[in-house]
Structure formats: structure tokens, C-alpha cells
Image (tube, rainbow, N blue to C red):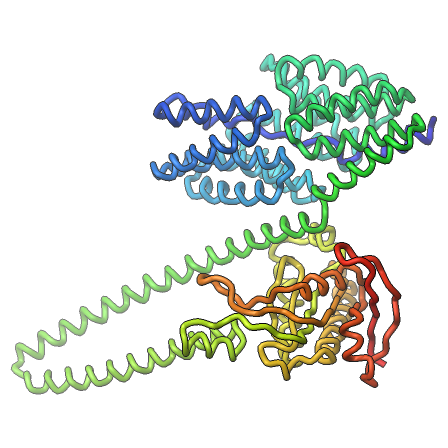
Length: 610
């Protein structure tokens, strides 16, 4: 019994949820003053959300967003975007929610809307909280709390205390969490808000579970369920039923646990809430296992794993990281653009002052009767102007050419300049290289945005130099992943052997940098690399911000070589091995045939220098 309770306590970690406002105060206030169509859309979206009909609510909000944009009402635009983000977060679509929230954050900062900004900061924090990025979550929660405290908003302070309590629960610090939940509970009792009292009771029940006080936990959770059944709707009911189910299982009552968790799953399925479906399936898996019902346990385990991977899998984490990096770069670009704009204004002022001085000189010359001299000076100035203009045009042309060559291969750039287009082409033997940092999300959580971007830049700059030295083409970066190719657009450059040597140089650089940073007490990355050789199609994508890209099964297989590799190793396919196996400088380790997702059994080799 003791071991079962201990195991159940461990699976409770990360199971509390940060809270968001179900309908922002700004939207409710605006609905009363808006035209009939606007008001009807918001009311209908709020009703649909409460009923769990999220697709209907999103459709209504899309229409409301169009109206707000047509009216050029930025405050309304931000309010609708926050509502959209909240629904996407409830559905487990964290990347879409985070993108929307950063957009709303920019609008509210520009408007100096402190209350609205605090709401956005809270919701961004809740996404990092759900993704177990606790350091970032705490940063955003603190920013939100500071604004609400400054404005003296008691209801919002109560919600912040709930979120901090939930954060400490997930960090397995229940005693600290209880302190925050009691602070929020005092606010809800003073406001006579039964619904939020139910939420605080739920979290106090979680704290009691984590402390091993199962009887006290059951009292809190049942009180929470009674309150939530009447005031806050099905969303929180699904969670409290999961918590009751786990409490019953820890108390060695698996059948009662199944009843509660089945109710939770039914609610989550009806409302299409993936995070709560995943939690309910995990609860049912353990409960059926406790009863010895292996078939049902296996079914729930499979569903739990599938849902968990969709919510916290590598692709989802990378997409969130990409959004975070894009946001950091956007902030840097904004600061740079303001600096450039200021410089342009100062340059224009200086130019206008120079023109004024020139006009004054010309007037003096005219009144002095030196017309012929003035004409000569004017002709000379015109000649100088033409020369300067030609030099400036030539400089801009060279700058444009350099920029184009920085984006596209030289042959493709030349074709684009000469003909206005560059046709896609097929290449038979191209070696695709993928890199990926191990535990990127965990390591980056301990770094500031500026430090993270600087470190990635340092690594990728070194990769650029290595790739260029072997005649390869850098294709693109995707978050923390780097992709390059050998054998295109010139099939004679970047052979399979040169791509392998480039990969080995990259690993040597990363190992040396890791040793250097760890000696200085700084976080550092390790890396996997995969290579595969085969046919691809390559060409330019799009007409705005275009880039040179490659397509084909070879790209997918190279990605699989990376994901099935190991840290500090270069993993190559049998196709690449066949091209480089006779190279006397390389040594290969046969890994045998490994099962690859979507490919079946594939033979792979580790390669190193002899």
C-alpha cells in the first residue's frame, strides 16, 4: 500500500492547471456599447465556449476580429485575439495560442494598456507552465502580479495567487503552494465568489494529496466538485474528477477511481480538451492495472501515450521554441528599426540645413551679379552629383548582389537576376545533413532569451563556415535544428565524403565549445547529426522572403537518421555509406537494421575519423 501511494503521488506532479479568465472584462464591457452584430458575436462566442463548442466560438471570434480590424479598433483586436488564444490553449494547441498572445502583447504595450498587458503576461505564463517551463512561467506570472498589485485589482490578484500555487504544486512544493491558495481563498470568500472558491478548494485538495493526506484531500475535492457543478461549467469539472479518481486510487479504491476518471474522460471528449483526455486516460490506465484488467489498462495506456506525445512531443516543443526565438528576434529588430529611423531623421535634418545654407549662398551670389560663376558652379555640382549618384547606385547594386548571394546559391542567384525566375531542378545524388541539440528545451530554460539567441548564433555561424569550406549549401535552420546539403546546385561540389567530414567538424566544434562553456560554469549543448544521400528536387519557395529549399523522401530519411542517432555521433544511412566506405580516413561502426518511423527497418552506421 505504501509503495502504491508513493507511485500515485509521483504521477500527480504537473497535474494542476494554471488559470485564465474565461471571458476578459474588456470584452464583456465592450459588448454592451458595440453595434448589434458585434454584441451578438461576442455573446454567442461566450455561450459556445461555456458549452464546450469551441469551433463555434472560434468562428464567432474570427468574425468579430474582422469587424474590429475594419473599424481599426486596436483595443478590440487585442481583446478578441486573447479570447482566441485562450480557446486554443484549452484545446492543447499551445503554439497557436502563444503566437496570438505575442501579437496581443505588442498591441497592448503600444496602447499602454496595463490591465490588458497583465492579462496577456498571465496567459503566456500559463502556456510555459503547461509545457513544464517553470522558470519562464514564474517570470511572466510575476510580471502580471506586479501590474495587478499596482492597480489594486483584487479579483485578478486572486487568480495570480491561484497560478503561483499551481506552479509550486508542479514543482513538488505543496507547502508553499498551500500558502498561495489560502491567500486566493481569502479573496474569493470576501468577494462571495462560489465558483472561484471551488477552484481554490480543488488546488488545496491537490496539495493535501501531495502531502499524503488523502482524507483531507477528498473533503476539499468533493467540496470543489459541488461548487463547480453549479458555477464554473464542465471545463474544471473534468479536472476535479481526475483528481478525485487519483485520490481514490491512492486510497486503494480502484473501482471508485474508474467511475470518477471515466466521467472526466467523457467531459473532456465532449469538449475536445486534449490535456484533460490525456490525464483521464493515465488515471484509468493505472486504475485498470490495479484491478488486473490488463486489456483495458493497455488500451488506456496507448491513448495516454498518444495524447501525451501530441501535447509535449518534440515537434510541439520545437515549434514553441521557434515562436519564442522569432519573438526575441522581432523585439531586437524593432529596437534596431527605431535606431535606424532616428538616424534617418537626423540625416534628413542635416540635409535640410545644408540645403538652406546652399540657398542662402546662391542668393548672395545672385545679388552680387556673379551669374556666370554661379552657372559654372552649378554645372560642376551637377557633374559631382551625377558621379555620386552613379557611385551610390553601383554601391547599392553590389549590396543587393551580396544580399542575394547570402540567401541563394550563386548559380541560382545569377539565373534569377538574368531571367527573373529560377526553375526547380532534380538532382540524383544529394547528401542531406541534419543537426539537432540534445535536451534543448531543458537547457534553454536556464538561459535568458538574449543569451540563448547569442549561443545559437555562435554555433550556427561556425556551422556556416564549415559548410562553406566543404562546398555545401546551407538550406535553413528550424528552431535549434540546422540543415545543409552537398551536391547542389553544382553536383561536383559537396560530395558525400565532404558532407561527412563537415559533420565530423561540426561535432568537434560542439564538443570543444561545450568543454569551454562548462569550465566557465555556463550551460552548453550536445548534438546529434544524421546524413542520407539520394534524389531531391531543389528550387526557390515563394515570392516574398523567398528561400532556396529541397524536397523529397531523401530529406525525410536524413531527418530520421538524425533522430535515430546518438549524442556526439554522426549517423549515416546505408546509401551514404556505400559512397564513402572506401575512404581511408573514415572508420565505420555498423549499427545493424533499426526500425525507423514510416520507413521500416533501415541499416545505419556511425562514422568517425581514423
